[in-house]
Length: 267
Image (tube, rainbow, N blue to C red):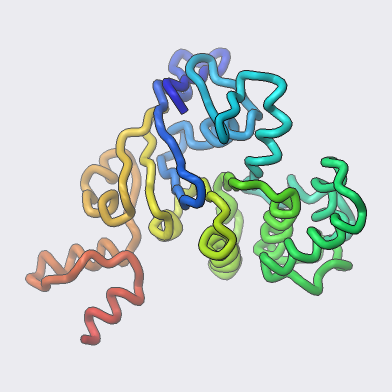
C-alpha cells in the first residue's frame, strides 16, 4: 500500500489516512486496533472489495485500480470473515469447499483433489458429506478456510475469524492458520482483537483512527504496555504477568507464551 486513503460517504473523518506498508511472501502479519480504527476497511481493500480514494495498492505487482487485474488479485488473496455462516453456501461440506474452484473453471478431477487436500490441511478430512450447519463454530470456520485454500491463493486475509468462537474453537482455527503459514508458506494477514493470537505473528501493525501508528515484532509491540493502553488496546496476559514479576525484582526474559513463562519460573 502506497499513500492509501479511504472515505465512507457521510463521515467527516477518513476511515484510512496515508497507509504505507508492504508484506513479503510467506510472512504472518497481524493487524490490531480498537473498534473503528480501520482494520476491516484495510482488509477489504486488499481483496478489491473496496477501492482506495487515493493511493495505490499492488498485489504481486498488480494494481487493484486496474479492472483487468481484479479477478487475478481475488484468486491470489483469499478472504475469511468473522462469521463463517456468511461464507458457507452449500448443504454439504465438500460442495461448499468446491464452490470456489468450480467458479474458477477448474476441471472436475482436479476439484476433487483440491477439496480433499484442503480439508486435510484444516484437519477436517472425513467431514466431506457432513452438513456445514451441524458443525461446531470452530469446524465451520475451518471449512470456510478450506474453501479459500481450495482456490490455491498465495495469501489469506482473515478478518477477526475467531471473534464468534469459544476458546476451543479459537485454538482450532489458530492451529490451522499457523500450520498453513509454517508448513505451506501461505502469506497470512490476520486481523484480531485477541492479543494472544496477535503474538503468534512475525510482525504486528498497530492501527488507530485510520492510521498505522506502530510496527514491530510481537516482543517490540507488547513491550510498550502504556502506549497500547493509550489507544484502548491490551497486552497478552502472560506479558502483563511477566512485567509484574519484573517490577517485583525478577529478571524475567521477554516471553510471549504461557509455556515460555512456565519454563522460566520452573527453572
